[in-house]
Image (cartoon, rainbow, N blue to C red; front, side):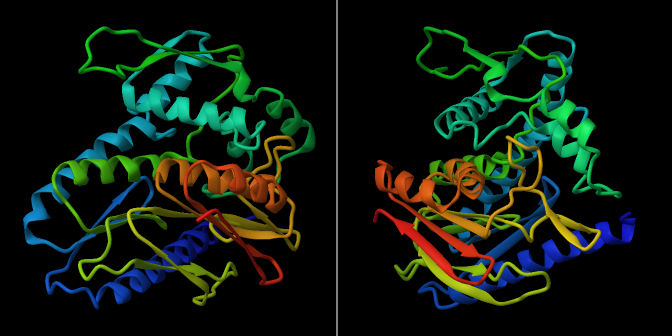
Length: 348
């Protein structure tokens, strides 16, 4: 049985990797053509968030974006009793429909479409299953098979129904919509996309305010605006997916794109000499068992990159090769396998 000390070890390790990634990004940014560079840091969504920008005039836009992040956190937190997602799950548990605001409804629509397209490899209804494992809690543990099977029976994205609110006002093209569920025991969890979605919303807000060059990091989810001031790409390191490692197995250059990684080293615990990571197979309710250690997705939209990093981890390289080949948007996917080898797929 794990102790609270182990919980802090997991969080310390994740924070250590995040600090290394931020440092790596900033080291590459030091060669930027402009002398001004500032990084602001905050804590949100249970992780460290940084925004690095390169023009003094952007300070107000960055501060406004951080305030906006606080608003978004109150939409997507599943555990905060004051959040919109918490209220949604409470309504579903009472077998009631819920009127979701535009941000939550848009995210749910993205999640549903991704689940449908991947035939359930991405499933946003595993909240109660994830709770059984308690990966971020004080006592992570392997749940009893009977309890896991019963809880898993109350999942399934296809049980969720979304109906947008129709309006004639062109200025409010996405007012939100109605959410209902066929199963009152089901819980929605948007942890597999929330940071990516919020990162994209912050980027959109900053660009609307005129920011031309910036790097955002939400707990390892990297989002870039434009290029570095000297015209070169931002260089992002892909960490060696091993406990305690500070090495990078590869670097990728990105410009006006997002880089999101899902890996077995991010949240996990050990029990009986076996390592259990947090990426669950929707079909079994157990951690995905494969030769994959991590998946990094480079894509223009941060929310979709976050969704895809989980989806492609679950689905595996064979599915990914075909997905990338047929994707209408530029995409690069880098797998780090448990034996240390790399598999890269790109349509660029």
